[in-house]
Image (cartoon, rainbow, N blue to C red):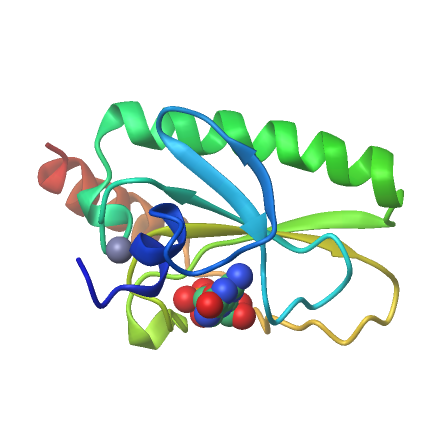
Amino acid sequence: MSDCIFCNIVAGKIPSAKVHEDEWTLAFMDIGEVNPGHVLVTVKPHVENIYGLDDRHAAAVFQTAARVARAVKTAYAPGGITLYQANGPAAGQTVYHFHLHIVPRYDKDGMRLTWPAKNPPREQLEENAARLRAAFD
Ligand code: 5GP
Ligand code: ZN
């Protein structure tokens, strides 16, 4: 996709600060980092979001993510690391080429994801699970 920022980064047409590259994935610094060491792991082919990720690329993304997380831990010794991954506008996705954020975290660093837990009754959870089992491919 010639007008996709991350396709252009993968192709080397737009510069990026690369951390790691293999056959399936590229890891590079997020231009809008939340904290130093904030890395994006992307897949090389143009895949908009998680719905289009095949098993090989899904596995490769998490392998790279684990390696990057260990490097972040060694290099920055953060208080923690958050993995963040958005699909679709309601989830906050702004670049429509699949990517996973690896964000080093510190106390009071200002990053927030509010989590309005509903704690539904068990029967509701069973119903939700059944609905998903029926939708599984
Ligand atoms: P999203 O909101 O889709 O989860 O994340 C997109 C991320 O891509 C943002 O955190 C943003 O800072 C980063 N980003 C957008 N354009 C560029 C770019 O040209 N280069 C790099 N390195 N990161 C980018
Ligand atoms: Zn792309």
